[in-house]
Image (cartoon, rainbow, N blue to C red; front, side):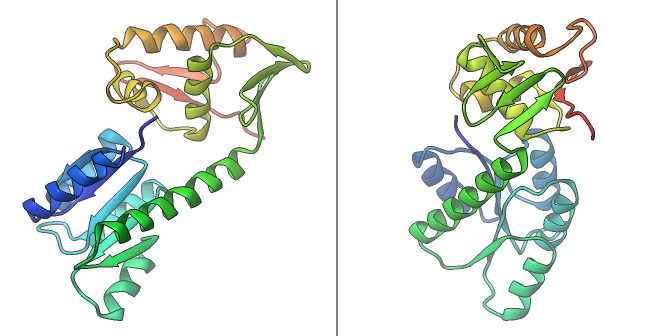
Length: 231
């Protein structure tokens, strides 16, 4: 599954150079040239990590960071042309997880990105736990199993990947296209109907009443969201 990076940089040559190099490293990359576009792309794409320039036209990188942090706890790597400690401190105080000062090497940037992704993955797995209860069904995320009364239930690998992805992103609404990109891969040449088929199969396994689902819910005209049980 390719991880999606959002690269926010107003200088066109640097933006495209970063995007091209990150794609060669196996990431799916979307870009933005200013603060307004960055927020729009963040809300549309729900990236795994944001590489965010401090100095942006319009809405500043600091303000973009502050807004993203209010809506998500995804990793944010700040790029800054300034070496002053004040700028670094301000960036970290509004929610950036790390920073790189320009000029930087691609190797340094990749190392920082991968370190943030490792920490984020570990945190998500710790939060989700090794098992998650959805009604009468226990999802063993680490073991890739669905259990009812301790007995494993048959589930296709891609359906389980879809369920695990939704579990790691509870309460977030994803379009069918987004789910195809995140679970099946950016280059997957399928149709959005594929997502519906897999959701239907999962509901038949985890829902008491698949026709009135409690957990994997349809947001009409948008896509799907997983609601974790409270308590």
